[in-house]
Length: 488
Image 1 (tube, rainbow, N blue to C red):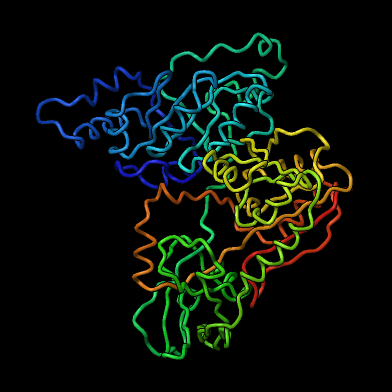
Image 2 (cartoon, rainbow, N blue to C red):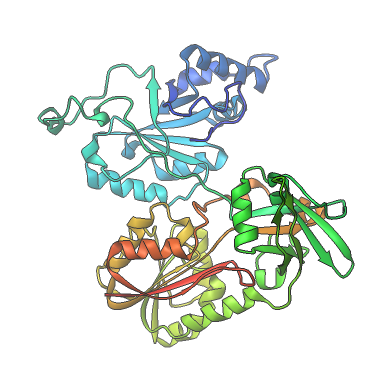
């Protein structure tokens, strides 16, 4: 689990391989702790919190009931510690959690016991918030209550007093004494954290292509031969490993040049120009590498991929269930047929703002808020199921495809489209514009950068679909793949 907080003097590796310790402090005591006295500063309030946490050997502050006021929450953020809302689902309103998560990192510690159905429904609604700064932990939740749920972190609450009373059914359970969920520190497997689907290749002062470079340097550099001369770019995103960069650039050929003046790219067909590798990287006898050489490519791979997808959508009839509600530019193909009644369209989308945009673009569409892992639809109702750039956003891929199987009638089709990661070559000015966008305006919610093979494997695992055509990603193609299947 990556650190949720920021500063505060705690090392980055504190939580690796061990539970995250949260000190439980009543809101009124928190207010007294950080209430400004004459001459106090935010730093002093944060320092008091840090001192308290060190004494408690904790990494964060938790509370039950109503959240502390903004002044306290600002002190928590300034201290760089984890803010944790703790309680049973009925005491943790989703609207309040969404607001708190928008302010900064938030850990939601779900206390139980709860019935499996009650907990599952609430967790589905929590997942639908899709807040990238929100993490979830279970505390004293019997195994039988949530057998399929995996929290983001393992957590121990300090200063909580006696254990919460168990449900009467637990006292009669044969395994109550060995149930991990009945104790303060149940083991929870971590979920994948959100990732970016793109790394930057930042333009650097141009130099001649060297004869050799170390493995890591050759993977991070891109030399581009243009009509105006040689240009050099370097990846400055430290979160990408040498192997990942090599997979994207060398194996898949996914390097693109930003030719726009936009801070936020919204039309890859016009905003990007494909790059073609004209000389591969070559390993030398001494273990170093001769760098690859690239040039701008002809053609518009993204426009071609979009046209192929539009053609597939134009053939759909009956009831279409779209898991992810968009992007809208795909769905405009369907607008006329929706209006005529030839096609019924149901969008299932966790983002309320995205649903509003879809509603404006597609009059007559049926819209519902939800997630692919738990579709609010009748079994066997769909003639077609779409996942258009939503596969990589799924938290639980097997659960989502099980749901797709459930709602699809025999003979229904499944169309899954998404993207692999790509490298984006940009000037310093373009990088500055893009990185000036506030982080909370571009939250990562990709959980993987899967290729078509991963989608095929997930579909095959259900045993419910017959794979049809597969369009994979490779050099000279867009980074968009497509898989079609038919319900058995």
